[in-house]
Image (cartoon, rainbow, N blue to C red; front, side):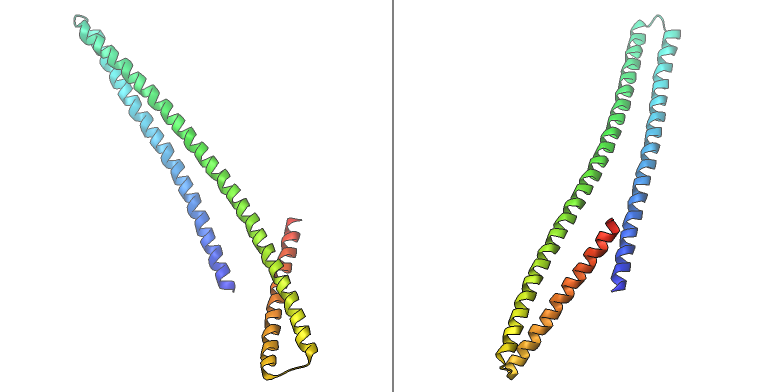
Length: 184
């Protein structure tokens, strides 16, 4: 009985550890990706600006080239600004998605706990009804006084089932009391 609980705890610990490591890795890679994107955009921007300045400085007679390079520099600037803004919005959307996933996970866990509680209460109601029926049946059989070989086997079976019901009810009551004391 102790071994499965230890295995469950170990599996849960591994799952939590892997989740934390995964989130840390995602954050580190996101920062690294952002830094590399920024560096690449800065290099491209510097290259386009340098080309424009050189042509403006040395090629005044080639006005068409200078105009094309200016337009290219402006388009490069526009692409970089839109890339940065899109990256920022994607990061915000990813953060929002993670937040919503966490909210949904919490809500699902709450619903599961509530359903589990209802299932346990329903099972306890069934056990109590069965215990009452078994008790009544045992009293009736014992009161009738006929104890043949078939009746003994039936009485034995009913007593075993009654003990099983009572032990499950007691176990549930002990767990319920333990949960109430931990909540308080």
